[in-house]
Amino acid sequence: MLTGAGPGKETALRTISQSGIEINNIYDVTPVSHNGCRSPKRRRV
Image (cartoon, rainbow, N blue to C red; front, top):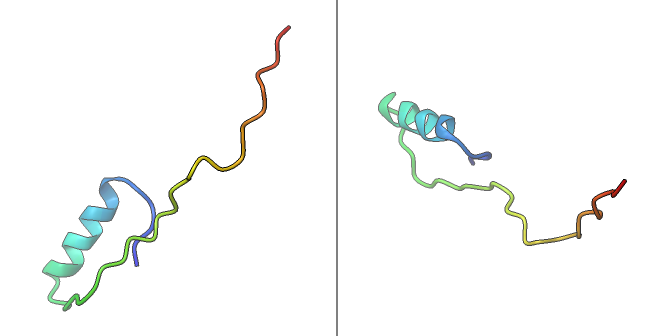
């Protein structure tokens, strides 16, 4: 399972596959927001 975004995820996956470990499945479990709670209003001074 992989979490997070960025170039490190792809590099780690490439390194693991080159080391000779057999990979059957890859799961990306990075949480994606679906416009949940509304953010508070900006304070005007």
